[in-house]
Length: 346
Picture 1 (cartoon, rainbow, N blue to C red):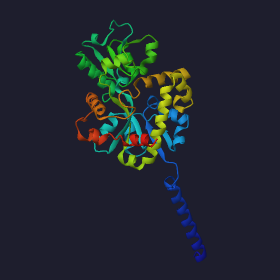
Picture 2 (picture 1 turned 90 degrees about the vertical axis):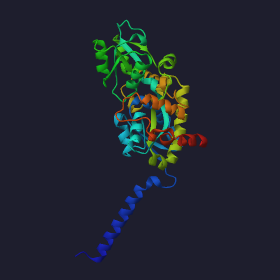
Picture 3 (picture 1 turned 45 degrees about the horizontal axis):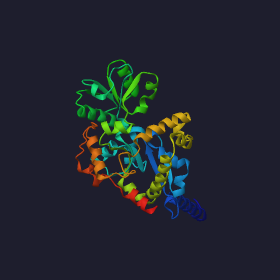
Picture 4 (picture 1 turned 180 degrees about the vertical axis):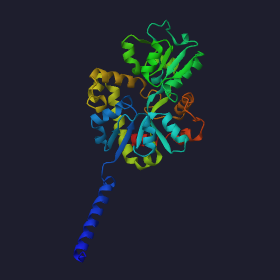
């Protein structure tokens, strides 16, 4: 039998341990503690301003701890929906699909436009020089549900091409299909095919990195790569979001004021660019710049811009998604307040 004195001592130690553990769990909620955010990223190409902010210490300067969950790919929507990340950077089809299924999510910020996935390439030896010469062709794109698939369908309708649009998720398979003659053209993001262009396998007939081709072929342009989160998380992280957007605005100004090479020098130390030369990083930055916030007002999405996005998304071929669902209306899914509040507080 354990003596009462020893029992009391054991109970006291257990109580102290329980208190200590509880205190550790509540550390982030103490007054004066640094607010935090975890952001899930689909790819390296979607996060240049975030990386500038990290490397230049801008998040710390504005008082927020930001963790970037690297290269989550197509799992970004599920990671955000589960609460494992506070926010996600992804194509608009991801949060739209969540909202249509009843998930309470909000779109907060625009990073990149749909034109980024609208370049058209053909075999390097093809006689085709313009898009309107591709009548009755076969176009290959990324999978259904993507902007490249939607842009191909847009071109088909706008130019009355009568082409077949065939999704092939792997860029290597798309290149092989065109070079072998099984397909006539690729619609997609130019950087995916940079090596094939350099090797003389493909040539570009529509370059939507150029403003002239954007205006001609992807008009109206639309927000595509967006920052989103669960509504409850956004409400919970109000202070963190204010600091985050202030830091992001400062990083964005650095991005706009700097050349691709200068930006590459800033971010080259990031793990996302491991093994890449400065020139390769600069090329990635250039691709990002071509569509960065050109379809919104400095990241702030208006009602008319969101309608352009819904119109474009109707061509993505997302199974079961009705863009007329009231859950996808501007008032229900776009929340400009966190960004507006951050800018008012600056």
